[in-house]
Image (cartoon, rainbow, N blue to C red):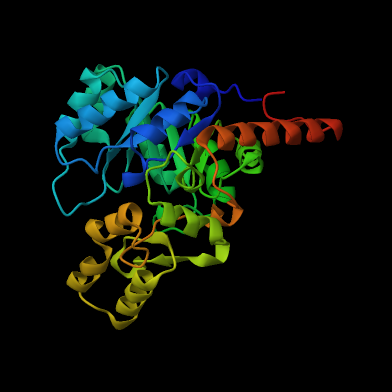
Length: 328
């Protein structure tokens, strides 16, 4: 049930890939996910200099001997992101997997990644962008639906529809993200034709994740009704937890405020204060709808083992009803 083209390509035990969640995706979380049988994914965009990324990669390598990846961020940023230098570092350090995500095309980097022997996962929030990623040479495409936390695109298509549409449109394996937090989500994704899942929010509320304890406790207390979609008016749509900062952004959107006023609230430093310092109203608090499925703080291994055990039990129950499960 858990052997798919994605697990074979990535060299992992379970078809579970950790989403690259900026400051939440440092070596400890990345290594914990890989050690538990999934694929940890480090976010490169938080680093100011390639040497900082190199040190974090080496730290992850000291914590796991299993495959992990690095994300290359293609979203607009307030400071230049040295992606060319980041790619050189990860190739030199022997990182075998890269995910690309953002509004810009991965085309400028694809040739270098392929020449470096890197497996590429291209992440998209639309079918057309997933198709384009596959055309450019991505080995796997990941699609994330309306339910996901953080940047969710502008199309508002749910995971339930986006995944089969993408599976029908590309030849490469598809990973499904957005709303996946347990074994039920894993089985559902496989039933829709995906060959693995991308999990973000659930891994933020784990003991190994480096976000502030207050942030984790906030997530455990929250339900699916406690997120809000903001920044649509500036075409940079994000799903976040409701707080004073998100309320302020909604007010700015309603009033047609200039971009400068938005940036004062949504800039990265304010988000850093939320995630690292526990100032829960300071800025945007990225979080998916599946926060409503998180009821306790667990270790990464407990999360992954629980997902696998639950998915296996569901597969057995479906088989007893005469329903073939993916992989049968």
